[in-house]
Image (cartoon, rainbow, N blue to C red; front, top):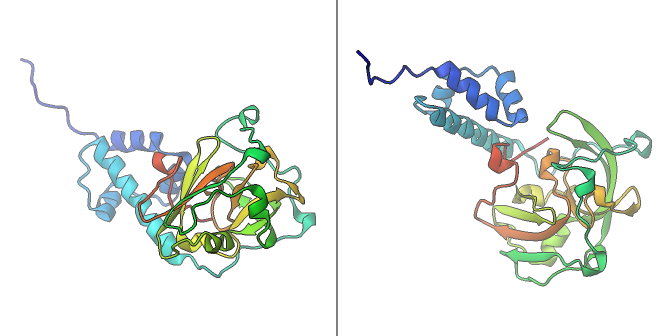
Length: 256
């Protein structure tokens, strides 16, 4: 006689499937710390009775990690800097698409859109941005895929730009939209960090397209996927904006 009783829930199978669909970086971190299913349930307070509940628990762990990183972040502690002799040559290209698909943006037509909790919403040309005090850094880019490279970046402090547009620095987030449809967001303390830079140059030359022309955000305190390229819009908000990879399960804070 057939039975309509559902088969028993196999928790091991669900965890394996959840790990399979997690981004590789989150998966490696999860496995590296050896978190068990029981530990996951205890940590998140979730009743792990389905694949959806396991995925929800994993996301809660990610958010706990975000909060822990934010508490540890220092707005004054600087990332290490390097000499020109230590630069990686050539600096690698990296994106979620091939080099042939890098967006072509005309410098003369470019206008950076500004919106949200700011007092000045006029668009900015590249010349407008370049007129702010110039800074330079030779810092290490750390990719979530496991490699790193040292590069020389020139531009302006993002904090100076935020001051010029009258940004509400008590707001929680700064978001970015890019010409290649990438998007991400950062916390305000990181936005105001002295090494967070609106980048216009690479190694003393106009920023090449493969590295983010016309404008990228360089943050040596963040992993590579938090450093947006080809920026076309900046906005300040108290509403969580998410991000391209973050909305697929990567940690939002993304500290390096």
